[in-house]
Length: 192
Image (tube, rainbow, N blue to C red; front, side, top):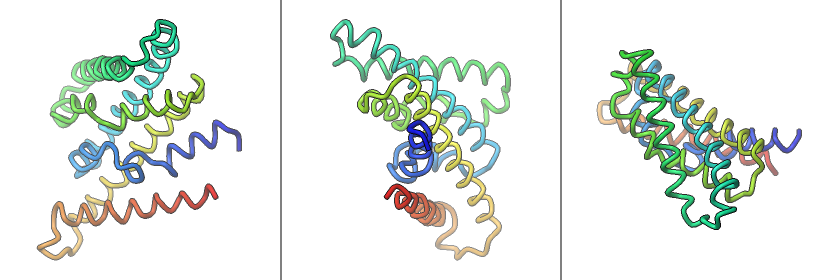
């Protein structure tokens, strides 16, 4: 498997941002109670994550580094992320008003999703090429969406399961997230 394939699998499964690195937990727990909003949030976050990482890479290498303004990278990256989120929010609001209402506060909160910023910062910190950054961000985005959809499907099934009263709701969701996390941590054994 080539280097780009390893980067993709690493971001998707081995170093999954939600279940291994524990980033982006707010939408993971907040939107994952139903499958349709989880799918929409997974796709919206994936789009924002991939596009903002690519734009951040370009701005970092063609603006911040040549002008010796690398110390401004966090501010620039957050501005890029906020701009991409605003663009995504406007598109969803005009194309699917009902979906926009369902996502509610979680759509603008993509701006403060630490996984989105982490991907941009880690791609720059690892000195990835533009193509490798695209693959890394797409893998991270796909991993985020995958985990969100898996967890939403599990939570929908748990609603109809015979769960003790004291475990219903958030407690069983957290236990399930922990077990799902253990499964993803197990992918780390594939690397060695």
